Length: 397
Ligand code: ADP
Image (cartoon, rainbow, N blue to C red; front, side, top):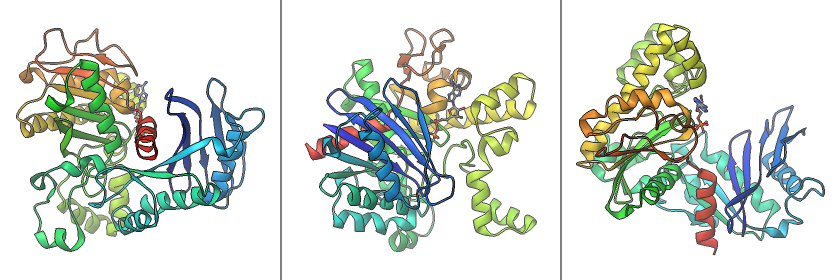
């Protein structure tokens, strides 16, 4: 079956067409500046160069139309008609407590996603627009919602409750949800396969280190804890997000700088993390370069980043009363040799670490712990689109 995977943002739409039999990506692309002047569609059929074309897209329905036009285009298309698309899989950021797995989209599901809008005001409404637009253009194609939060719904109450009055959980569902669930599930399963181990008898810590970053503790295939919370702001510090901090800092800085809560949150989401701390960039490549050129603040930022990841690994080893495998994934986890090495320095007490030679790889599956280590340290590239396509086919059949 050919599955169209859609990841819809407020002014962008990313897509991949995946052949679920071969798991090959037939084409992929991106619509940018939807609803804004200067729209741009990038389309890349498998094995060919990217094709960029300017096209104003007043709304997401227009963007979906252009995606389909590209996919069936005589010269560069990869299918002959819309009918070849067997299903659409939508990435949905927040499923709240309503969804612990992917689900076929109907009106009831749309309503339940809408009810989670409050929890992810920047993402869920955009995800819903994506669903509605696809329904308009492909009314007879079954659609599936795959949630970023679903995999983490197995977390026990002791892990997901905050130490605040319980009434806020009861009234507003304020609790930890976690994100990147599709990736944590995909990578933990793949790590078990790669090691030839039974996932149902394995303790895995997945470090998803991308622009956004989160860690999860996966015991016997189920998530028992993860570092992101009610929103993706909690946990590690990331490209531009602060991660954990003393909540009183909000009041302190807002008083000093005369900022509103919204302005403070904007700073914590967009101007903090490695960007804020280093003053260099949110991109780890720039950060690494600056550190090599002797920028002390960049060096400290890399140290602080690795230190925080290592502390989470320690706490999740404690949460699971042990760990069998520690896995690095996403942009930084898959590619940043130096950061992995720095984190590895903290793992000696677990009877493991990162071997310098084995660690000299990028973007491929590998064991990077030394021979004979008690705990395997691995790199496993994530593939959220493929995971969404697999979930979609499982439900659509
Ligand atoms: P997103 O959360 O946006 O999906 P990614 O998973 O693509 O983010 O990760 C982006 C990060 O990965 C950037 O900080 C980038 O510097 C880092 N990265 C990507 N490739 C490399 C590389 N070859 N070496 C070092 N860092 C890399």
